[in-house]
Image (cartoon, rainbow, N blue to C red; front, side):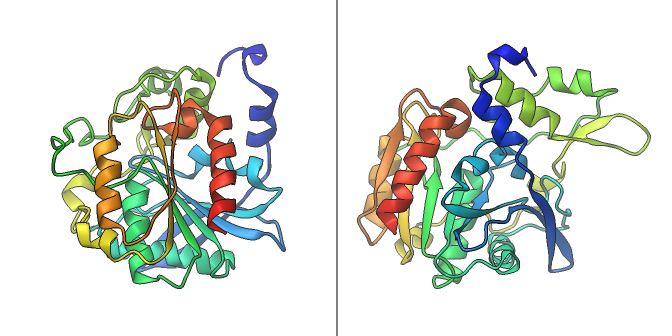
Length: 290
């Protein structure tokens, strides 16, 4: 993961913080989540992006435990949650609500969701507007009609089987492709993204049939037009997936004035690029939305 003297102490302290592994059944599939019990504190649910999982938050969640009780979920088809024959936004909304309920969070909790997880959280906010107090999207929005459509070809990947962990770790890449100066974070995520496969070897923790099994996943303008839950937005100033046109279009659609903060020297994977700035920004935004 890199030499010990290149990895900051705050990172070790965070990833060594114990968390419970829990699960809740939704439509005959187990939805797994990591839980940091903190009785008496306000709830916060963290939701990952495409092909990711709850361990992406391991170095973020513990930094917030002085103020929040936290759950970080694995959407089905990713991480340690079960795979489905079909995935759709309404079902993901049910999964989000189920984790909120199972964790014991009241309707004053925050939902913080990155990228693809943000699209699903918007649907959950529309289906269950009284279930949580505020939604904070991380580099997640709806593309402006003025922007060219994104290239999804790199996202539609087939799971490869590697003979050993070392070979797999050498091939770990972020999607969409981007550089990241915090190699120790990438290595940590990569090590927690592997699963053994029957017959030997290792593969990444996501359903290789995900794209063919997706139904009704696309973002719709009305999902944003109908938002009544308080909204906040954090994005990477250098993100290729979130432009100022996107922000302007969202302001046209969303029927409320919402805070939006760009983080310098951060791309789409904001909290990997600038983890400490992200935590500080998230804290401030939660206070603003309280």
